[in-house]
Picture 1 (cartoon, helix red, strand yellow):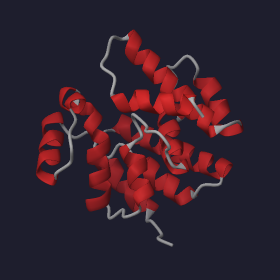
Picture 2 (tube, helix red, strand yellow; picture 1 turned 180 degrees about the vertical axis):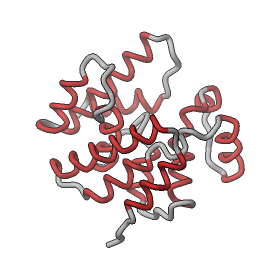
Picture 3 (cartoon, rainbow, N blue to C red; picture 1 turned 30 degrees about the vertical axis):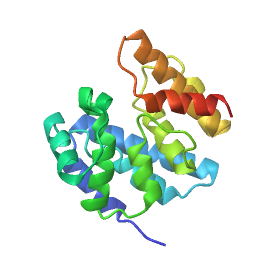
Picture 4 (cartoon, rainbow, N blue to C red; picture 1 turned 45 degrees about the horizontal axis):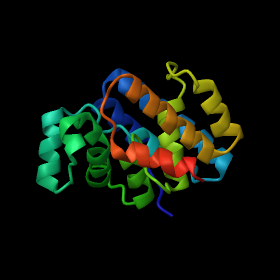
Length: 191
């Protein structure tokens, strides 16, 4: 089993991210560890994915697009129009190549933490949800309900609830929606 130097990752992220984003990443790592304990997932992998999930969030949009071009990372039309979405794919690349993360489940969890995807692994669902419910979050109307479902109920239902809230917020704001978000909602709504 691979062991990770969580202290090194934490210190690296503290230098890599702005203060608010770093605190959010710590919150995601702690929440992911707690959810992993509740649902029988690997706690260390959850912490690693949580601390690294936004490792490319502070990279400028042009630089993210250039990194994608240079490293053959596919960019969809919606990502080209909304390059902030690329922090997930670029983050997975950074985790693999700068932090030597080789575990595909961790890399997928980082890559899919914003839009989700159908049939996510348990770790992917944990990071997807943790990004939404970590302690510093407090703006979404059903946050308490989603937290309760994630910790005491059905993680698939919590995944659906997050996808539903994200879709509603984007639709209400007249914002463009990545098809992966709709696919995630449809998949978990039909379980």
